[in-house]
Amino acid sequence: MTPERSRTGAFSAVIHALFYVFLFFGCQYIVTMGYMTALMAGSMTGGTFDETAVMQLLEQTLEQAVMISLISNLLTILVICLFQTMRGRNPAKECGLYPVNLLRCPTFLLFGAALNVFVSGTISFLPLPEEVLAAFENQYAALYGETPLWLEILSIAVITGITEELVFRGFVNSRLSRAFPARSVILLSSVIFGLAHGVLLAVVYSALLGMVFCIMYEKFRSVIPSILTHVAFNATSYLLAAMDERWMLPVYLFSIAAVLFCAYRIFFRRPNFYDIATDMVGEYPLRDNVEREIMAEVRRMQEDGNLSPEAIDRLAEAWEQNERKYDKKAPEPSENGAETPDNDNINDNDNNTKET
Image (cartoon, one colour):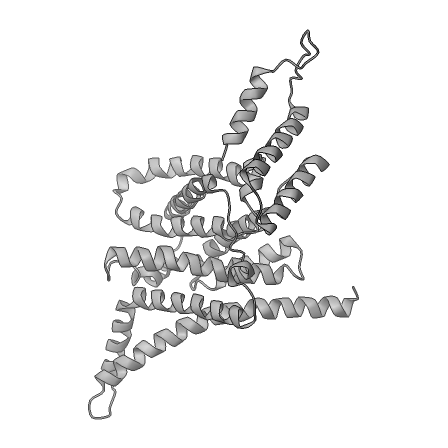
């Protein structure tokens, strides 16, 4: 590829990525201005609109921040789905909405909850300037306590988490990855995600969280892991708000252990066969050509829709046979020439099969 074509490809990838970011904020702007216009039309008396009325309008808008966020996020998802459908493309595939092993889902949820406790606790323990903390708290004050709790959780924790992951990981990451290496994609996407969160403290910690979510997306090639982690992260804020301060330190210490445990399970643990069979597009550190061939066959059957239970059993047996090559204890041959099963290895294989 020539330098000119490379630069053109990079510029095009950035433009495509920013398109979805502007679409995300555009929907928020349209819904917010639509609500303010409706309030203005009902508040104007005699064709005048003084400073007091403007302040009341802003206060009423902030009181409905949760509902505005809910509507704008749903509008964003709707517009993206319509846009992709009009282009003759599958919206789910375009944003990386691929299935993953369901047995992994509790790990993703625990990871998100533990991350929130760890981040919130770390921020509270750091000697940050009061004005920085005040700006951070004021930015999110309207999202807590002004509306029913169930609506806040639905809007801020669930729908916002889903929408941000679809936009920033599903579309921004995938578009940038067409022209940039993985490390550059993670850095660029994380910075964009951080800048979308307003004040300085929120920008910094959101960028760091965005980096974690990006790495998850690059590993699994699916937004579902980062969606579950993001939703759990947001929802945990409401639990922490109701928690007695005396429990904060022990819960914080537990969160450190939980983050390390989940990080190992998510990012470093070798996959077992059932991870391969259920994660449609994940990237895994395979050890040899046999594992690569098994994975390729699973992918072909998934695409053709004929991954039957019999095929899964056959491929799982081939996977386990190949795993035995790497067992530390090689089985000894019995008197009739057959291999004597090694109980430790059998248990290891069983555990690998059941491991999430």
